[in-house]
Length: 193
Image 1 (tube, rainbow, N blue to C red):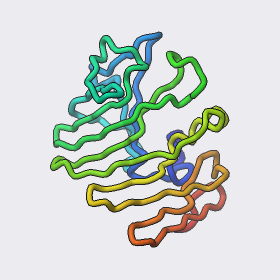
Image 2: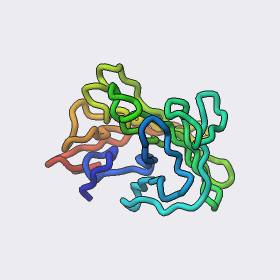
Image 3: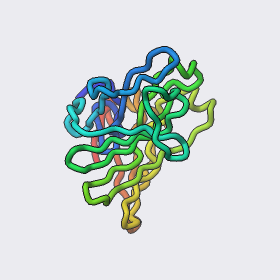
Image 4: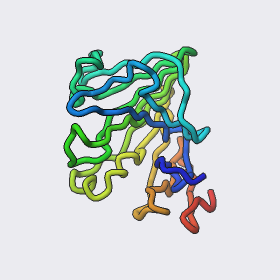
């Protein structure tokens, strides 16, 4: 697949943690997706935008719910999407063009937590970068640092120092128990695991 969305394994190469939330901004006000048509969730498993049914909540830095009709964009830290089937997707809101005017920069949600309908889940953390590093390559914000489940098992992610086909690509995933999986690329695509 050759898609404009960022994947952890180079162009067209995705993992389930590459899910992301996107919505529209209008001038200085956050335009909340009160109508689900304004919210888009990219599903890397299917390579499409979800036609999801459920509820969405916006939270501030203290975890308090925000009314999207009155909130200013800078107040929103987290979006929680709960499907009718009970699964929860928590997104951390990031500015994908750091250094630009926050009201006109593009904001998206990167997945921070996934829970099944019983509350069992996985938490995703991302690598940290300096403002200068993000100014040079804003898409670094999508680089996963680790994924931990509620049993304490953790995956750790390493990325190639240079982009592969214009995308940051995973070079190795450390598994629980000390083993790892290595990824190699050729012709700007994932070549072997």
